[in-house]
Length: 229
Image (cartoon, rainbow, N blue to C red; front, side, top):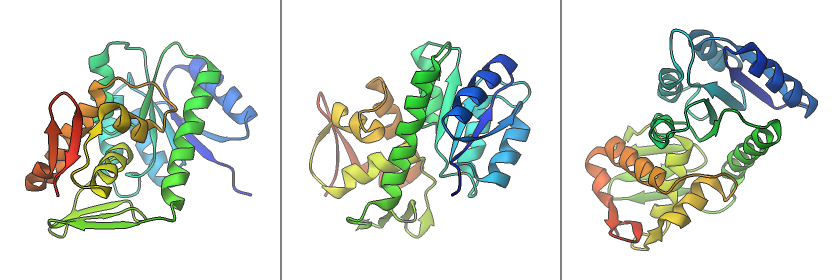
């Protein structure tokens, strides 16, 4: 049986050993890269099930790595858990805006890290195996959940997993207003802490990537968002 493979992109040897020991003990296969360039190469070569990415890397920093992971077809759909020593909300928001799916602030406990990893892997598996509606078409926009693909006027729109889940949620019921809390639950499945402002960041990123179609996502002041019907 194939082991779930995790790629750790981290230059601190103590954190690497802490992660390797605890993750391998849980039955995961662990790959390690100590800089951004090697991390990108390993991600494309090995296609891990999840990436743990430090933001403060030598040379190519974690934000650039995350951006490039989301720009490459081979790595676009791999969930990314950001590890950061920065606790300010703005730094966390930037990481999520670059395409990360979740974050952990150092120092963190191995138990919390494992919980976040399991949550991300469960959400990924659930999205891949959802037997319900798999395709939505509206106003030139096409969402295909089985391919994790968004097209607008026939052109691909490269969304992160979190962005795709949020857009899929809105598009399933056009005209229905979703609160920020409901959208947080969709992004995290209630399994990770996330600040409300990050929903706004995800929506802003989706609108930007959709171009003209971004107008389909309407803000309902004081409540949340809806997809225009």
